Length: 270
Image 1: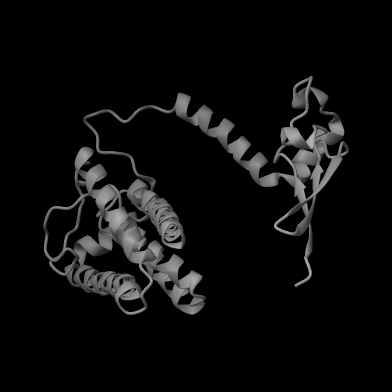
Image 2: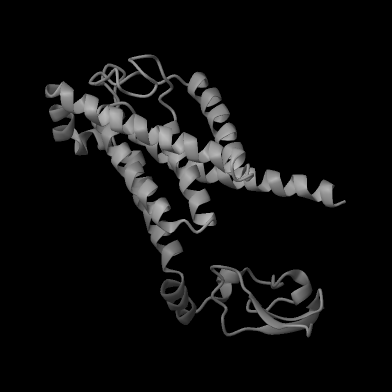
């Protein structure tokens, strides 16, 4: 097979020295590679220029270039400055008051409806339990039926870490918690608040569906996961931070499970 040609542009994300360039050619596994160094440094140095610090060479055009082509990092830079101001000027919640939770404020009307209508709360709890069952069947089925253990390993990693963190820092149950005998775990039993295993498990299943190009099923799980998060906030079954970290935990442990599986393949090939 004829060797394919490829061009790789190597540049530091926020280095605006786009007018300064150098090139180095070579081959990697028979593929011709042209590396463009846009910071002015020698290719052997990984594109790092010698002498003055990079920002000292910036011009007004460079600043405009960064603002134009790196809008997402600029947005988060502005967010950093904003929340530095917020953090150092807000009043801390006193120990005599319940935790402040923005998600609880947003779902205040929904919470009142669930608290005053136990039948609705039980119906939604039962539907949520069915969704948790769907997650469990899918995640275990990818291993037992399809022979793909990544999602199952992800869930094992995630729930073990959740147990460690949940036991290490045991958050108080919200004062307005609305329980249900139809919820999972079944009945009003104790559970870890940090972080949400419901949300993390759904994310793990959704990521696996996307790998297998089961797009419709993945979108269905994402939609149900959002509705689940709203219900958990409405019942005060989780704090907002529990749900947000649940999303991140699902992504993290799916990635770690993938790395674990790849690491196990290498000794087998050797």
